[in-house]
Image (cartoon, rainbow, N blue to C red; front, side, top):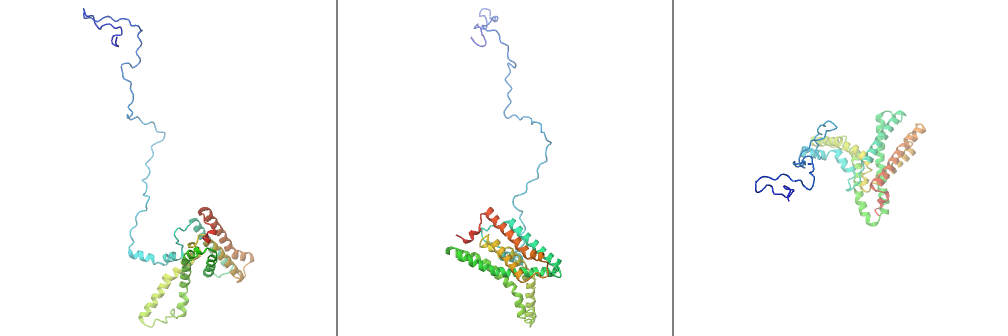
Amino acid sequence: MSNWNPGGQPPYDPNTRQPYPPQPGPYPPQPAPPGAGHPPQVPHPYTPQPYPPQPYPPQPYPPHPQPPYPMPQPDPGPLARLLRRISPIHVARRVFKPSRPGIVEDPVVARTQKIRTWVGVAAAVWMSTTYKIANSIGDAAQARADQSWISVLMLSVTFPVAVGVLLALVPDTARRELLRRAAKCFGAIVALIASVAVFPLIVLTGFAEGRFATNPAMTVVTALVFVIIFVWLLPFIAWGIGLALTHVFRTADIHETMPPLLAMTLVWEMALVDLFTDAYAGVPVPVRLLLVLGAPASVTAVGLWELRRLRTRHGLVVRDLLMR
């Protein structure tokens, strides 16, 4: 029996060579399934299919991304690099800004300090001209410049006292490290005071009056010295005073919490000086209190906020000053 002959009969009669008539099988014939005789149509796994309809219109291509690194700048040349390095502002930044390796720099705190400083200066100048403390804006600005120089002198006295207190409190093994960190702070103080001392020196020696210009060569030297003083030394002093008061003579080289502590101490010392020297005589009492106490209150608020930010954001606390 086979699939070709379900009845088991030979395909033809051997005598007549004629095929046998079909015999009924044991089972009734079954209807052929649909699609019989054709292989099933299975899609090839790699046959591309049509994309479904998109719900949105096609979007334009995004712009080509920029490289993550800055574009190379042309070399300014050795002369330009030399002039940039010896410029008064660049030298003042190197002398009066802290540069200890690993120092924490918070741009939010620096921006707040600058805003507070300029707002305080503008408010003091406006109140001085409004209440006739100064005759003009120039006189008020000159008074603020004098006060800034007095602040530098007060800070120059306060800082060695603070370092002496720290030397008495830190362990013996940390004193050498403390003095090494404080060396650049003392260097900044000496640089600023020495720069300002040039002016009384040239007056006392008669250099400003041309005492040494006895021949053409000395006349040229005298003129060159005056050019250096007015072109280089004056911008260095002006920029240096601002940086020295902002960074508190780069005392962050010792520890990041020392600048706000010294700044708060300095402003209250200046408030006592203004109070005992009768700095704002003839001004109404409320305005006088505002002028005397406004700067200490604002600087103290910023200093406390800076200490809190250093503690919460960077894990730096005041007791780290003791280096224990």
